[in-house]
Amino acid sequence: LDSTHVWMDIDIAFLGRYGISPVPSDYTDYVSHHSAPESARYTKERYHLPQSPEAIMDTWAEMAKTAYRQTLQLKPGVQEFLQRCSRLGIRMGILTSCFPHLCHAALEHHGLSHLFEVVLTTNETGLEKGDGSLYRLALETCHVQPQDCTLFEDSPGYCAAAKQVGFQVVGIQDRMFASRQEELKALCGPGRYLTDFTGIIPEHFL
Image (cartoon, rainbow, N blue to C red; front, side, top):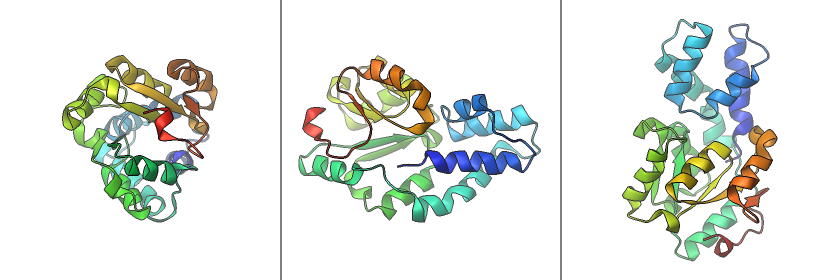
């Protein structure tokens, strides 16, 4: 999903309610690399907010609901790429720090739910995407070996975590990590960094 702008807009609007503007870059970096519960806890403690972390998460989810259910677009070429994977019999799953109900709403909106064997969220598992345990859980859930799995990911930190477990990794360009493109390219290796999915042949990577 091309969701970066949604969460940046939510950060701006939410923190703006408390007179915090602009949104500090280190805050954006932290919440983009942690699950919603951890990000909410961090937000409450950093800015001494009166709401509980649970109430903060509820507010974020409500702010994002319309975008995920109705307007959020896929990255270019994603739908064709996933459909080709499906035709080839390639098993697919999702690992995400997105709120579970928002993730499922977006998949249903784009008609993609049936393509994925499993959806693991950081909220439901209690594991961060930077924690290798999440990738090991995915392997156990799908009964596969790490060398047989390829992660497509825009975050250098998450690519590094998966690679340490033994996954193959392919980097995807995203504006949130624009300053770390070279790091992502180095992690993934030659020919394994994509600007988007347009015209991408799954057989080249899987």
